[in-house]
Length: 308
Image 1 (cartoon, rainbow, N blue to C red):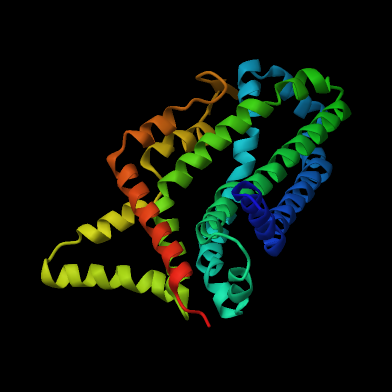
Image 2: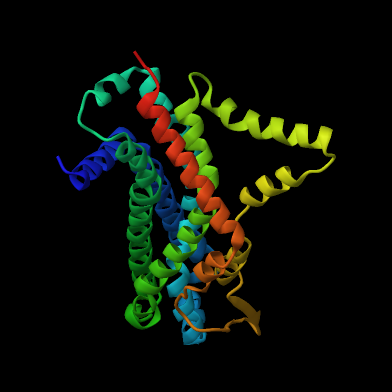
């Protein structure tokens, strides 16, 4: 079995063994559709009514509606990304520890599978498999909501294509989402690498092994050097990349209300400036080296530790 086929097989294994990759976002998507239907069937008719709602849509600036369409996918993705922010750390902490806990590592080591490929498959799971499943669900969800919005627009006598469907920004929205997500994912690589190393090292309680060493280093630095440089460095990595504020702002503050209408400022679509800002940040490259070192350490531990 060549390396590529092995990697693909291992990624399939991760998706089969972790049903939460699609089950959790799938449940969230269903809940969002239910809430949307409740709002459209009960809230809109009992408040403004379909006719007035459609009239207000028709009066809006077409550029603003275009922007709403282009930002629909990244806006919908926000709660899903938040959930991924909880799923990924726990997955990484358990990824190499679980196979030693249940002794399945003895079976996997009996197969002609390279330890490096096995460890890298854990990276592939969090950077490729999970995002593909989650964002696939988000895109399908955006299509469903856009379709339903057009149908309800027709209830108010509006033209679904003119007011809704032609403004749906599949490609621009997906591009904005991917650029924003992977910029943040790259920024968090050293944190994820450390969790992977803790999973490979720990014989028990990988969470404690991930948390206690940094805490101990911070305490010792404070005691003997009277500084907090290590704590500040870790703290910077635990918050989003500072330039990502532009991504959040595009979603949250694209529209200003003026005389009751949405006023758009800017051009629809996405750009790669966020990744550019990341790549010229020295801390990013230091973190990349640290993540690579943690990955190499995890490979070494898995290869040479005696699990018999």
